[in-house]
Amino acid sequence: MAGTWVFVEQRDGNIRKVTFEMLSQAKKYGDEVCAVVFGKSVKGMAPEFAKYGADKVIVAEADVFADYNTGAYVAQMVAMINEMKPNAVLFAHSFNGRDFASRLAQKLEAGLATDAIGAEISAGKGVFTRAIYAGKALAKVEITTSPVLATIRPGVFEVAEGAAAGAVVDAAVAATAADVYQTVKEFKATVSARPELTEAAVVVSGGRGCKGPDGIKIVEQLADMLGAGVGGSRAAIDSGWLGHELQVGQTGKVVNPNLYVACGISGAIQHLAGMSSSKFIAAVNTDTEAPIFNVSDFGVVGDLFKVLPILMTELKK
Image (cartoon, rainbow, N blue to C red; front, side):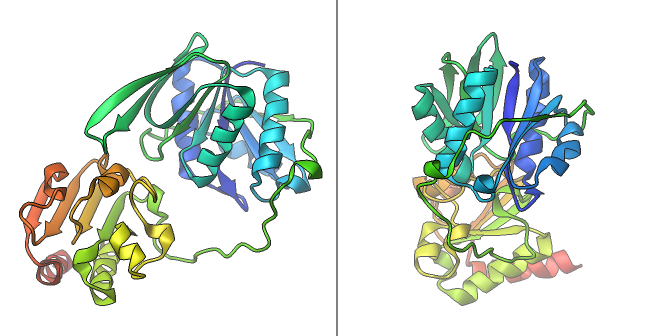
């Protein structure tokens, strides 16, 4: 069994949109497309993957896969790859995806392209486009080892439905309790009515210019009016104004929304690395020389405490 594999990013049966983006893209390569899902009682998800082009759904079900675990997941994937020999395996560029793909590449002694925003796979090799220097340049990375491994940035590929067979293949469980070298004692989900940051079509972020929780509240009010996700710069996160899960940037999350609104964010290169590929960027800042204006499509030089209330008043009309 060759083909292109897409590892399913899911938790408790909730499938992340990036999975469908990768499946839709993989169909363009003219190869057999397989969705690969690990978990406990996950076989029922198969019809969802078939809707987006999965010719086969490879399922590994066991208690050891109930929660993401690096050791068990890598052991299982190595065994499956050695047996079925796919041409390529794609992962989401998420916290788990980055961890999984890098450990897998080390075990297989294979090349890995990370945070790809473009991908072409054919004839046993892959050519991936990556943003470098905080999005100021693009690099082409060629992977020639087998299988081709890559992590894909969420939001860069369009989702397209294309019915396929979605035949379920039960994989032999190779991972054992001995492969588990870390245990999740408790998982506390962050409950929010707002869209998940990396999947939001619109993101509104606040930075040092918010000056405190009151400024962040204004950012959140604008985000709620736009149905947007809320993010923050490292300065806002380190100050305790927002949770660490909302940090946008090199050491946080990479977002790629249709609209990114930067409020009181100067635009340090570390922050730009996490949002510069957004399709449209608007910025509000008091500093005319702020680097954020160099990547913005639309900018307002002004105090966010004055600009955002005016904007929200106009949006209500």
